[in-house]
Image (cartoon, rainbow, N blue to C red; front, side):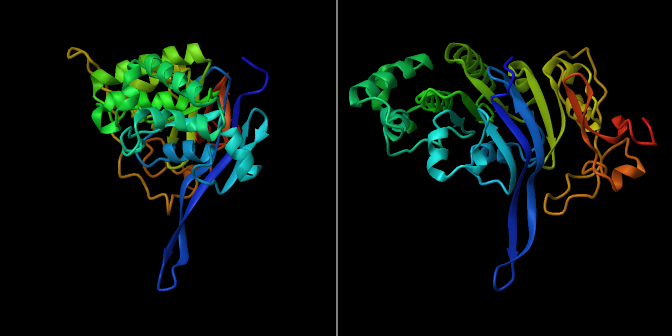
Length: 331
């Protein structure tokens, strides 16, 4: 691994104003992302998982400034892109691309596939018309389609094929980092494995780095080197894929993993059922945001935000159960 990470996020926060009344004044805010910190090494795949509404997708879009963060730092190749002007951000975006969750909604239905894939190259001034056309045909074949598909419209393809087009578009400008925003969640299970295998082979061929966002724990385990778990806008655990799945630390991670079905009718796992519903991100609980549902909650959890700390080599957790400075100790 390189000495300096390709991507480093420090205390990233993205809040959305809640407005009400006749004058539409600010009456509150939704803390979609609330102090997330992690890094991604070059050539690595970091997965981000969590329940719907935990802030995974907002984190990914905030990293690219598709959604403007409220505060924090995002370093890409050592440069804080949140401090750049719009013009400089546009240049950096050539190295940072995204694959969206819904392949149909992310493709312009009025444009042919050739124009859709070639447009990023046109925007960034890559090649002439003939070179772009040749590159489009090469990319279509790389993602498992045929070059004559460049003359068709998005509605003429299946969901899996449309996602392949989305992948080809992301690759068009030779990026270093790709944010994958639940790229297989809208696809059939049989197609999911094909797309995941394609993404893995493309990663090696094009020397890519992925941030892979998903809610399917088995999918993330299959593709990721490290996995981060989010709850209510915060990262609660981050570890290597093997360590996280074999020995989870945070009570929320344990509950998530216990819900994964085991494909063997003779084996039964002990399911951890969390009490209550996920609190509203517009009014999160004080202290540890998970304490209202945690089976191991202590008094300190209600008042004090747990530190984001390394409890084992390359294994970070935000939980008072592992706070060595806490007089309460470990339960």
